[in-house]
View 1 (tube, one colour):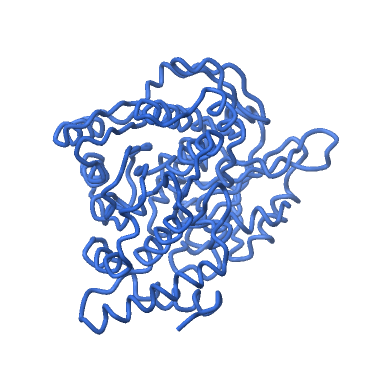
View 2 (view 1 turned 30 degrees about the horizontal axis):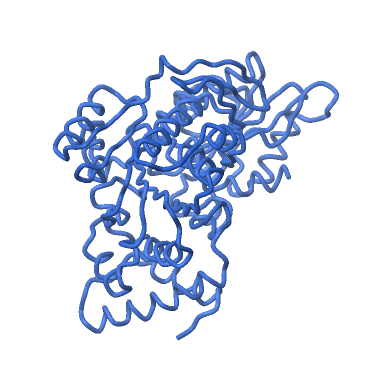
Length: 436
């Protein structure tokens, strides 16, 4: 059956309702049924907890500037379904989603009749991306791990040219393990024999795990050297820094943590150069300068005296590590300012730790929850947790009406104040729409 876009999305929603399961057997069966399109591609495979998307965005833009056709696969999407899969910055067209889902549905029908394991939604979308990237004849695909590494559906690939590890911290502990070392071991499962890897600077235990896995695979691994990052300039229009042999790199992404993500992307670009990919310093500088990655310490509206507006910032900080990074960025870019939060988070996150890190700096907090999302922590529960952890904090429970929360924050904020919306990627599209 040939589907249109609406039918394809309804079909995918039906699969999504059946839940997810880690493991490679079902995705291997599906891909074999589709002719193993992934085997005709080359990959940079990236795992980690925070910073994967930003580091990938820097590298993606750089490779495009160098003249390569670059695919990128991420999950979850924030602003539109099609943003999960893109080639040279362009989202997959809706008609292509319908075309490939139709093909995949027929393949799943054959698997079902043969009593073979059936794929989950993430496995279907991963297969969809491989079909699209193969048809587009991508030179290189930047492939983001969905969760973990070893048994993530993306780890079905065999043609990786480079692995990247963004910052690894505690998250998804019910699936990946309750220590950093256990989580790192799972994430290191993407390493392939004699394939080089680059990593952000990591906790000592995490670094040991990555080094051991690299040695087992007879592979080289390099780590970002934070002491080698030299900040040259910073304001609300961007940051300029030097790193190792790269004397002047300017990035428009503002979070203080973006310097580490950029350094990781520089390490990756240098490694690709060593492997024979043609990336000039000019392409690299232009690529980094033109990188866009919405939702990560993104200033949505400038405030200040005479503007009539408060500053508005949004960030996807949803775990303790990202919360520390957000606080560091607010302190660096808005020192001494009064801060108001519009804050919502998933119930399966370490929200009490996030509260302890962020709430003390807030003048007022408006609690929200992502509309219609069963993972969302109810706003009332979030309010009670904040009041328990930070007694006396001025907290207002709003609920699922995100625009109402933002409007209330605006009414309470002055021109020199900052409204920071954060806690989950799931409501950032509404936040961006409000301020645009």
